[in-house]
Length: 307
Image (cartoon, rainbow, N blue to C red; front, side, top):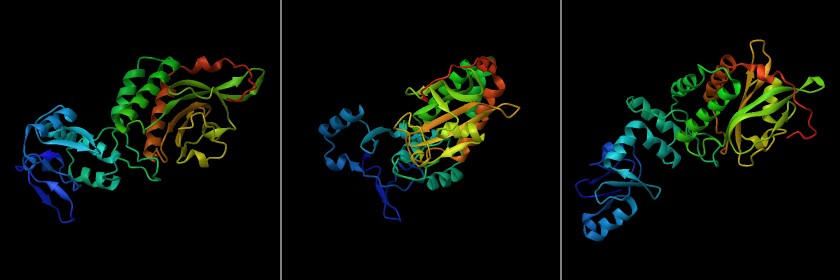
C-alpha cells in the first residue's frame, strides 16, 4: 500500500502491521501491510510517475495484492462491501476459510459472491466461502421456465453454472461443466451408453459406458459421485488431463430411471463440497422436470470405440 503519513501504521498485538487511517479498507483483517510512505520518500514527481505507470493514478492510497494493483481507497471500500476483497485474499492464501466464516458472522452486511472459492491445487482442503445458491437458481429458472426443449435447457444450464463458478472462483473453479444423456444402443435393447450432450469446456469424450469412469459410476449406482482426487478413482477416464476433482449428479426420472448425468470437473484437488453437490442435485431436478426427454427415445448406433 502506498500512502502518506496521514495514515500511520499501527502494530497489532500479533506483531502484524495495519494502516490506521485506511483501516476501513481492511476491516478487522489483521494482515501484513507493507506501507510505503510517499512523503517519507521525498514526495517527488518520480514517485507519483511510478504510481501512474502501474496503476494509472497519482493519488493515494493505492493498494497492491501479490504485486498486482487492485485499486485505490474507494475501490477497496467497494470490494470490501461486495465480498470481492475477501475472495481476492482467499485466492492469495492470505486468509483461510475459518477466518471468512468468523468475519461474516461479525459483519453480516458484507455480501459474498455466490458459490465457493477453492484453494490451490497443492492443498487437500478447499477454502469455502459462504454460498448464495439462490441467485443462481433464480437465473436458471428464468432461462428454462418457458422452454421445454431438452437441448436448449441443458445448454443454458451448462453456461449459467460454468460462468457463475468462473466469476466467483476464477479459472480454478472449474474446467468443464456439462451433460451426458443415457441412450439405448441400436439392436441391443438392454445396453445403455452415456452420450455427450451440451457442455462448456474443452472437447470431451463422446460416449461413456456405464461400467467406466465417474460418470458411469453415477449412472450405474444412481448416486452422486463426489470425487476429491480423480486420480485415486478406479477406472477414471481422463477426457481432460487438467482435471483433478469431479462431481457427477445422476439425473433420475420419476420412475427412478437414469436419464443421464450432470458432470463438473475442477483443475484443483477437492474442488467441490457436499453443499455444491446438493445445489447441483437441485439444478438437475430442474432440468428433469422442466424438459421434454422424448428426443432421447431414438436409439444410437453401436460404436466400437468407447470414447
